[in-house]
Image 1 (cartoon, rainbow, N blue to C red):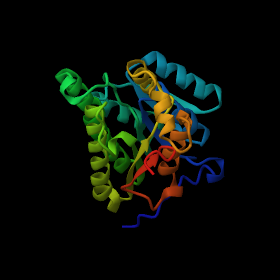
Image 2: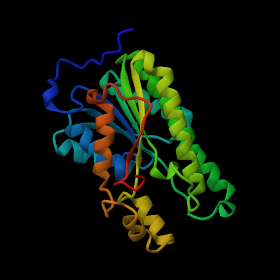
Image 3: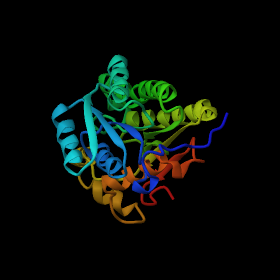
Amino acid sequence: MNNTPTTDTSTPAALGLLAGKVAFITGAGRGIGAAAARLFAREGARVLLAARTEAQLKAVAEEVRAAGGIADYVVCDLADAASVRAAVDRAVDLYGRLDVAFNNGATFVPPGPMDQVQEADFDHVYAVNLKGPWLAMVAEVAAIRATAGTGAIVNNSSVGSLMGNPELPAYGAMKRAVNSLTESAAITYGPEGIRVNAIAPGNTLTEMIRTWEADSPGLVERLKAHTPLRRAADPEEIAQAAAWLLSDRSSYVTGTVLRVDGGARA
């Protein structure tokens, strides 16, 4: 099988990193997902935004359109298989194909040691942060196979998946499992020309960090002190890494978990 990446020749590649591609983004109502929606559209993709909160999705989609991009949105519960499948199918219904997907959506529970994690919170993190990406990848692979033929998927993991995570044990465990799913999917679907990678962001200025800071005062400054670049990332900096991995410029990259952490794990 010829796995050489192809592009849509109807749109000159010079127009953007993702020109001619249809992109599906979960968790797109805020933070890294919203930054990805804006960036992917600027880079030439037609984007479908998915998340649970319609008001946020609508606001981001309207912002993208106002800037000249092509965007729509669909309300989606990542823990529900039918909802995820319907959201991915919506991309195909709207744009006729699916080329790339960024599985960014995740949830967060109060920080604390393992013995203080509530069972309901553990189950919720599992359903959204691990089962959600699994459900999404299954639906996305099917849509890419049926339409574009080849494509790319990026899962949003965390630098906290690469080490012990005593403050967020359930979150870290699910993200580490996402890394394993990413590697397994890369091996499984690589022969078909479907690349699967993950990114592992470090300290990023998102609602999750702000919530964690409220429970652990001084967290942001501690994280900065342990980061060689001595600052937090802007969400768009994380989205830039995802955009590159989804683009044809990373055509020989699959099965990797790319750290985007300011050197925190160097």
